[in-house]
Amino acid sequence: MDSSIHTHSTPRPTREGQGGGSSPIIAIVCGGDSSEHDVSLRSAAGIMSFIDKERYEAYIVEIKGLVWEAHLADGSKAKVSREDFSFEVDGRRIRPDFAYITIHGTPGENGILQGYFDLIKMPYSTSSVLIEAMTFNKFTLNQYLKGFGVSVSESLVVRQGHEDMVTDDEIVNHIGLPCFVKPNAGGSSFGVTKVKTLDQLRPAIRKAMDESSEVMVEAFMPGTEITCGCYKTSKKSVVFPITEVVTHNEFFDYDAKYKGQVEEITPARISDDLAERVSLITSTIYDILGCYGIIRIDYIITKVQGEDGKGHDRINMLEINTTPGMTATSFIPQQVRAAGLDIKDVLTDIIEDKLR
Image (cartoon, rainbow, N blue to C red; front, side, top):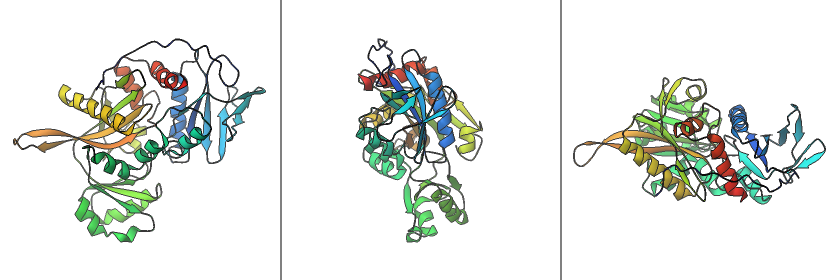
């Protein structure tokens, strides 16, 4: 399987955008209804700064509940029609040619928005409805990929309204301590707790249920945390250099992720052999699921003893991010730079592949 990095030049498009201009119109769709609404706005600003302005006419479209608005150059906002995703700029009705989705959480990372764009026949930057829904549900994803031989942590789900179906003792006997309690359907670090004692378990479950109606309790795996990005088009397969995540906190929580309480080392301080294995697993998972656009897979590398009595590195998948952060300091732009690529070209690859 080709997981090497290739570059190619794409001829400048001559087609007209749906708004009647000479350039294709790109809607950078952000916001959403999760706790990461404002983080998504920062990702949208990052994509707007990266995108090829000579090639595309780009607008940020912010979604929150039933309020859909396009941000215009003069600082004003235009209402976006949910009928066809169009909006008006200076008396001109614009309907984007492509939606670049950078919502972290619902409705952009769980298949809901993808279904809408499918209905109105607008191409978009992410995977399909099914894959978005599956990757958003951590427990379902883990059980599915486990069937393909992917190593994942032991886990169980507690559902809202059915919390008493399993006792604290049963959870701990099955999962062990310490363990992680996290929203099962969520695209953020909100609501995540590292539980060390039995009395911390129920408060952690209640906290996670503020973010999701399902909570996953997951066994703790000590080891090295890494993350690896990947994207593919009809013409190329690219796996980015791996980033090692060294947090100064208990785990890679919101403060570590967004307030700089972490070291992000790209490329990761792992052996070439291990890096090659991680890259291959990342590319393989991408293909198993049939992903599209940029994804980022988080892993924990643990030490296990093999039948030969020697220690070996086990690559354990934590989760898949299908709309990863896209600020200048986010993992993916870091990895793109480490690969010697230009993020502008990566975005163009993804857009052009769907506009052909």
